Image 1 (tube, rainbow, N blue to C red):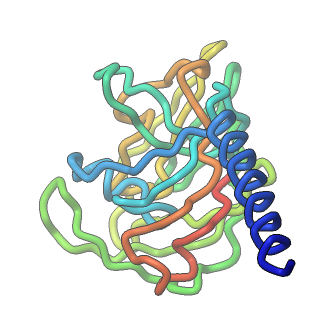
Image 2: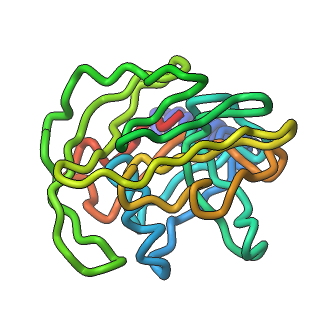
Amino acid sequence: MMWRKALRALIWITIVCAVLVGIMFLFFEPWTIPGDDPQLAVSIEPTMSVGDSVLVMRASGASDGALVRCTDPDAPARFVIGRVIGSGGDTIEFQNGLLLVNGKTPSSSVACDQAVVKMRNPANQDEEDLACYMEDFAGSTHPALRSVKSSPRDSKAEVESGKVFLVSDNRPMHLDSRDFNTVAASSCHRVAFRMWSMGGWSDAKKRLTVLW
């Protein structure tokens, strides 16, 4: 009978879905980006936003260019988020607001769809214009923000073995290794997918997105 075939198909679909969900949670951890730290909230823009529900790989470690969640070296019960821009032996510099990795600046010749982004700086509550551009680094293409008017102070760091240097995609309003130094690579987990955002389904760029 037709209803028996339909019921059998529904049962098999349910079993397959359950297996797929089980596999997903075996390799990935669901996590919602908290909004209790204004500096973290602004530093992860424009790639991610507070309230995004993401899948984080359970396996630790990440390669250059990867977006990762790492244990906060200053508060082990909390996390920091950044892009791996250097590992053991690399030299990371900021000169006049520009990032240099081993003396070379990552390619960033293409502007984002929204070339200028207005964002409030939590340090002084001033609203600032930030230039958005697509950056190519280590096989990753991602948006990054740069100050339009002022340039942050210059800095230079050598990355130790077993450590990684994190850089916020929001370069001027950062919360990254320029603030808390390098972090242990073993404490980092790749942020792989965004499942949902506060914007819901109305924002196609903020849902079901591959982030790695």
